[in-house]
Amino acid sequence: MEEIEWGKLPFGYLKTDFNIRAYYREGEWSKIEISDSEFMPVHIAATGLHYGQEAFEGLKAYMGKDGKIRLFRWEENAKRMQNSARGLLMAVPPAELFEEAILTAVRLNKRFIPPYGTGASLYIRPLLFGSGARVGVSPADEYMLLVFVTPVGPYFKEGFNPVSIQIARDADRAAPMGTGRYKVGGNYAASLASGVRAHHEGFASALYLDAKEKKYIDEAGPANFFAIKGNTYVTPKSDTILPSITNKSLMQLAESIGMKVEQRQVPVAELAEFDEVGACGTAAVISPIKRITDRDNGHEYLYCKDGKAGAVSTKLYKLLLGIQYGDEPDNFGWITIVE
Ligand code: PLP
Ligand code: COI
Image (cartoon, rainbow, N blue to C red; front, side):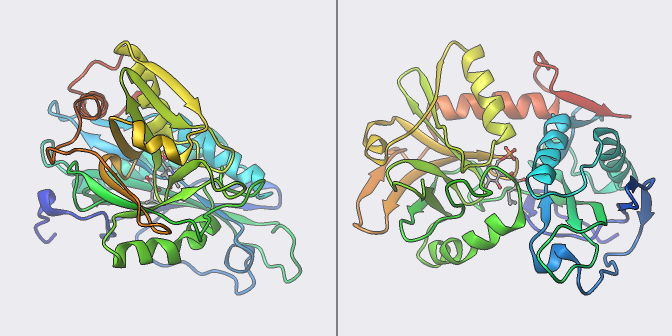
């Protein structure tokens, strides 16, 4: 294997040794299969390709100082994939199948788990899609579950350094009553144009507002939004955002350190009242935000005036990573050790 510079890894794809596949056919899930190919044959009329009958997940395996491999709340990812599957009328993978697929993928690619202390981790990407052929718009009768892994560094190149993001009022990643709460490819396809434009205009991500009223903050392209106001952790409540496992965990951690937690509508105007703001997710971890620019009117909301992440965001970041890498006690039962 070519030497990997663990500390310099971007959030990207790197070939690993094996991936895992399972098939749903004639009403039943197959046993898992191990593949060393990066390719798969797909029917030319598969619904996953034509009608977006597709969902994915993202979680990470972390190498501890003690040499143990830890998974963070994989059961939550399994549940969310099942929920996405139900939302798009796909076959629902049993949690045990999901578990066996991710554990096997991690075990077989152990040499790609970044060493402790490099700031990198092994990203696990489960994918579910309609593999059966349809030409009319209807759900497939066959599905495939695939799991690949790849070692990754921070999603935003800034890492834990504060980023700038852009409110995009002329774009929505999800419609009211649509699929925003599911982790389905279509939401990401819908976010590409505004996300790439935000990059070109110098921002790490777009920030979307609620699609109906354009008054409240929804989330960033690949991550939830949170804010700190005094001793309160504030995060949007909305049917069109992805229920982030990281955000849910941060809410619990915030409460555990004596903070108040408010999950509610967050009006754009309230951005002027926050002490700290950030994006959170498996890939993004916590990305502190230093500037939010409203693309329509040029209005800027500024944070991190000393150039550094805020004290509360930093504390939550350290706590979360500490649990994930095994440096902090797992008081909530979030960790699974991969034997
Ligand atoms: N929001 C979106 C749109 C995402 O793609 C992700 C990543 O999965 C998140 C939020 C964060 O979710 P989680 O913390 O479960 O990774
Ligand atoms: C994640 O945080 O796992 C994501 O899926 C975000 C992005 C890579 C789509």
